[in-house]
Image (cartoon, rainbow, N blue to C red; front, side, top):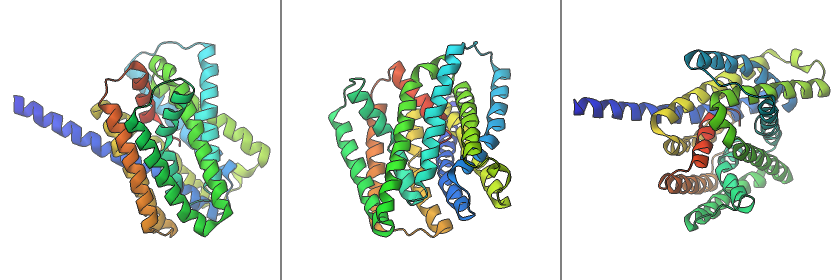
Length: 325
């Protein structure tokens, strides 16, 4: 009986690791699809609107299924206002400026910069919320940003001054999502990660369609056919499906292990960029990526070794639920 239980636990653990790894790699494919869409003449405003519009019914399908499984507590209009603002920060603004940044830098650098989001949360918590940072965490921060700088040198050598613009935009995207993560801690605990994702992403869909309409009133309906297929892949395979995989993985193995499996994201992005977009892979790029991954591993390991407070647990749930960066 004990051996059967141990075997079941081991199988559950393996499936959790597998789902987390696959989810991280699928998330990373977003940058590849956006870059491919740019080659067909699409702009960031239209791509974001198409992605959110196609993802929205899938998210609401998940919400409907979840609502059938267990009752959900009612939410107030104040909650809806907060969700709209969180959707603006973490789903609209962060995604939009990320799309803009992808026009100027490689997909490898973009994913590595976004992978630093937990360090931005840590710094905001330290300087704004007065939360302490351990010596190990400071070391991890230094190593992580050194790694990004090394990868940035690689991009700047080929893209020149535009690499600075791309870097600033993508880092701004990471900062916007970091603020969203901190601000969502209380709400994800109270209303659940699924409902938060569905409401916030729906708000983002409305904002992205309005923005696209203001920029180019009929652009959503006038794109080349490949752009619609790429947007559908982006919304489903690189947004909704990985979100589900990572949510399930968190339930099976916990957020710290899921975060460690997320290391596969930057690695897969660099190799997909090489295979699909013909972006070069250099030893400088690999070295910088290894430094960033080592820094994130130190942060996750340090966090996992401590007893989690309710606030950190909320942030963990949100990490796993994030589908749109």
